[in-house]
Length: 420
Image 1: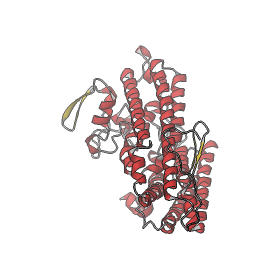
Image 2: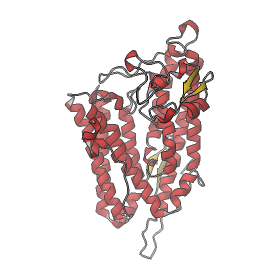
Image 3: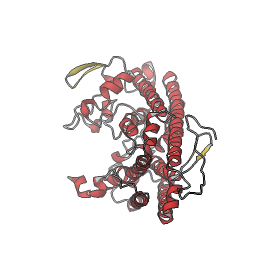
């Protein structure tokens, strides 16, 4: 079994003593091995994206723009399968905002439609447009942005003035720079940024094409370095792996906390039900590219993989080892069967959303007021995610782990609060 930075899995041993045939350490080892593989695949696809971005900047054309967009969508496939490592693993959760924070006030980065407006009470820099401004005042300090570098993005702009919507780095900043705003509301259609936004001389549209290219290049370079750092955390002696293996019960709790929190508060609540409640396409996760249905699908798939202990790498290599399912099956077969069935049911619902988009109903169209079919598609998946979360909690009880604290969401726990 070929792996990059993957620890060897211990072989399952059957003993004459009453101990479980599947060791907790083996389950944690499989989970960490798969994390290492997924982040390595995320890095590989980000490298391909970086190459496509550099080609776009060097030789802007309709084709190089299309190639960069295709590479971005491909890069999301392995990365979204890693989101299950959040919440239960502080190293991942503390880092995640650098690469996947959303939603973002895109006016911080570049030009926006006039209807977008300007500064707000919540964010004084919502329309800063750093690409158009080589110098600006931020939190009372003059910032020299004559050169757009990874350091500028990471240390001056990201969450500027402690506002989470000031997202200057990561996949979604790159997404905006490739697609531009999606101005279609809940109608069909993604962003339509032209390749000429990166063209030279008189062919340049919307001004500052060289600085726009500098920003896109810096954001891509930073994404690579951030993913390289995370790959190292899951290496055999990496901090993320070591933190999991130092206490087996705490390690199992971390796995289940990540599964349950992504399933419930983050995916079912913040990313899906909230958009239905508000009928707001701005609540789409990949809102510029209209790729949201796939992000949700791969988030859900990552949860299932964490439980079943399996993942297929980009090169087709299959990783499969001792799993939580194996462990739970030994101590409480009904609880295992219930969660496996619920995970399957969720994937059926996610597949139906993807299939609907293939048939012409974009995800943002599903959020439109009065689109009963779209609302049913999204809410059926939300309901399935909630059901599987309850099964995850029962698995925690079956393993006698003492309970877990899951990420919540007003959209699920107190829908009225969403409108206050």
